[in-house]
Amino acid sequence: MKLQTRLYFQKTGILLAVYLMLRFLLPVILPFFLAWVTVGCLTFLQKKFQIRLFSLGIFYILLFLLLLGISVFCGCFLLYEPCCRLLPVCQSYWTRFSEYLAWLPGSLSGHLAVLMPAALSCMFGIFLYLISVLLFARDWDHFHALLYKLPFAVPVSNAGRRILQCVKGWIHAQFRIMIIVSLECAVGYYFLRIPGFPFWAVLTGIIDALPVFGTGTVFFPWIVIVILQGDYTFALWLALLYLITWMTRELLEPKLLGDGLGLLPICFLMSVIAGLKLFGALGFFSGPFGVLLIRELWIELEMSSSQRSNLNL
Image (cartoon, rainbow, N blue to C red; front, side):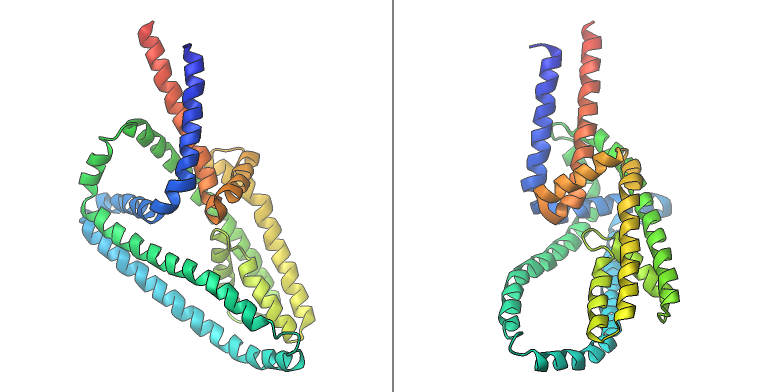
């Protein structure tokens, strides 16, 4: 078989293997993969501060739980007053349109029955993630020695290092978009006279940076609440601000994130859309990650083939 033909077959095999891994294996091992990436990041702190990796893992878990508890408390505290103000409005609408809204309890119970297993699965995934961080931190060197005994460990490791550099560029690009969205929200909240507008602007920017969520997670419920309260002018201004932030991300994301990952903007956009179609919400990350992994493994394959052909010559 000719070298070029064999190379095509090998590239096709890599493409199929990456798809199968992302489609079937990644959802199963996701908590362990995230824990492995987390401990890998902690190794940089270990080298810098000369602290035991296991101690860093314990500190990270405690910090994670603390931030999670603070987030839940702040969310409940900040939503308590708006919910108390909205409750009489909802009761008024329920009284006026009770016969039309009678289907809501049954509909909501059906949705809750569907969402409950997903919520429990998410909580169990977080538990597995934290436990895995602790175990990886304890046996990091032994686990890496075991990994390098596996077939294709060296080319996958080389590809992973280059992907890590691309991910750093992606994080920088995501951070820049978050700053721009936060500044837009700060200006909008200032003119709308929102109390504590800098805090709310930064919080909106952080939520916008999260996968799947976006600024609509903040603005849609807010607009609905304001409409129910009868302030249609304020709701219109909020809708305009949402449109501005949405257009900002839509315009900047393909360019900045594509450049950060070393992909053309159109290729990044296509990878995200294909990932969402093939893998659901997880595809926002797994789509571009799969394209990067395929590209880097193809590069490794071409380099090894070139070296073998030079040796034969």
